[in-house]
Length: 441
Image (cartoon, rainbow, N blue to C red; front, side, top):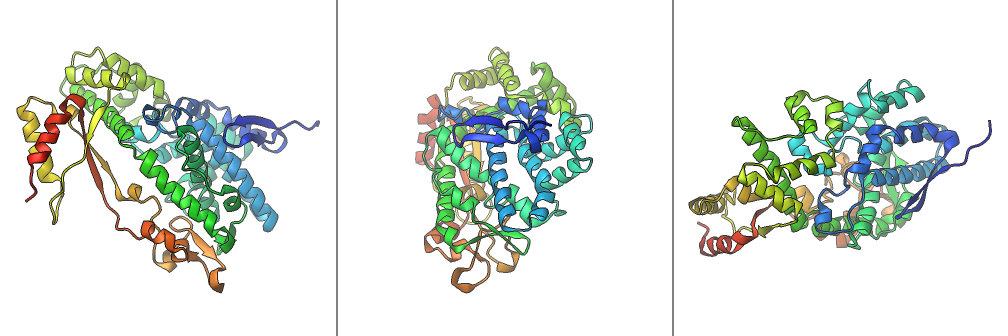
């Protein structure tokens, strides 16, 4: 049989991404399934393009980047270890790299609360859906491959060696290395510059888990700071968070209208999905795409419910809500913002405002404020919860911030929970006046 030329993808981050048609044609068949091609129509960064206009890249471009890095990581392992051990796991790892994001809904993570279930749970369902194209392609290559891939992308499953899962999901994995650099490029933020090549070509397997040699510690330090800066300046940008809150408020309002016996005017795909309740099928889920939601919002612009139509018009025309940080909060136990929030709501209700749609609360958990928060106990550390260096001072695996003092202010800070409120821009002045006269107990 004549040798086939590789399939080449032109990529703005790596220039060229190549998949060998002779050994990995099945991987291309997997890429061409409708479930994977759907990722072309899902933004990698949700509504971040409302803040950074260049952030229009898709989940599919990120998927190809993860496959590209995973190929290189496996080649590196084959060069330094028993190649038969690595080759035996190669197909399952590459398939998991290709499929890891297939369960994302519209606007990526933003849709998880109102579509139900996180993207990893849906990815697993898509892989195991016997009537689906992904399952068919995987099973055609190897009848056990769907189960292996589902296990690899399942956080709670520990059937496979730790190093295999760590390549796909850990504190320093192929997924993070691609999205930090890719998101930095497309947003123009410039924080994603770190020596990924050294990180990718120097890791080792020790006690069946991933570790890095001492020569890589400064490249990893760059990576950790890059991750911190991207979260603080891009992923948690207040404008982006505000549009995400507006999107969630629209869906909540529509469901409330329907629950009260009204007509939410759902598009067929959304009506079908939400009508199934918690029993929606994979096919019903996959039909809910980003253009489905945008069409829905466009319909809501003319909805009889004034609150819903107002939110829809503002969202479609980028009329953003103003961000309001709460005043100094109460000390002590309980919700520190409860008294301020109650006072704010009471005052706005007196003005005839709808709290559900005109005073949106956005909460960011501690783990996102501090994207690298390592496990401190040495016997509990692994690649999934710590980045470890071997060979430093002749010792065993050591968590990297224990070696680099510059990282300690970042990894050693007390985690904190952040709250912010969003109101229509014309309400900003009134809310600031409420804030100015409010005093904590």
